[in-house]
Image 1 (tube, rainbow, N blue to C red):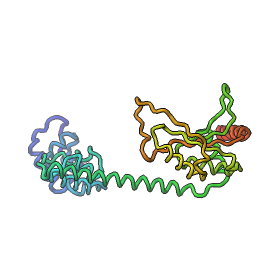
Image 2 (image 1 turned 90 degrees about the vertical axis):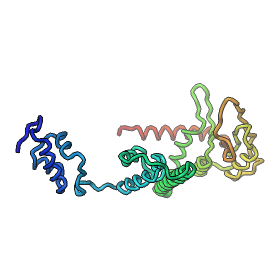
Image 3 (image 1 turned 180 degrees about the vertical axis):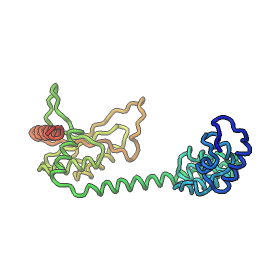
Image 4 (image 1 turned 120 degrees about the vertical axis):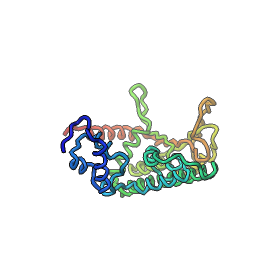
Length: 285
């Protein structure tokens, strides 16, 4: 039977047929072809209230999360609690349970807060494990470092973090300052590769005056393998009471300054090496 795209003469009769076909397990496409109803809105009205057959539902990897979310909602859990428990987005939770009536809580506010905190802890632990695994795989991809690779890393590291001469202020000295102990160790390994004797290195600490200066000096001296008394005079940074500092506490050790004595010639070589890297990286050949 052919119908116009406007009104249907016997809508209710057509709806009865559509419902019967729906309950018989037909999809919307099959019902459309059977009844020759090609208007999408009309077709939806004809089967309104009738759930689609199971075979038309696409498998979804999140089906188990949806089912669990609905169970928790019926137990009185809030959207935030369900989100924290399942580790999914709040919008997904809303989509899955919005047809359910708002339940009466079946636990105390303290119990709900404890559950939410536990869920958040599980979520953060999962994120921490994922983060650690990503870093582990990335670290393993580096493998052994050749002398040439360490040489290039050191040149780039110095040019990014070390003191550089300026046209208006010539300072041909090798001075490196950093707060990251790993960066310091890579820099020292690079100097070893270049044949710079440790006797040519001078160390001193830079730190805020409100920190534990003695502990920081011991920390850096142990890291670079020298006696604390051999460090240069520590530079103390004045504390600005208007500034809220976050680098505080026992983990704050300031920065270490590494200076290569009689380093003018080495500085010129570093500058040349960096120019060579830039030229090679930007060459159009």
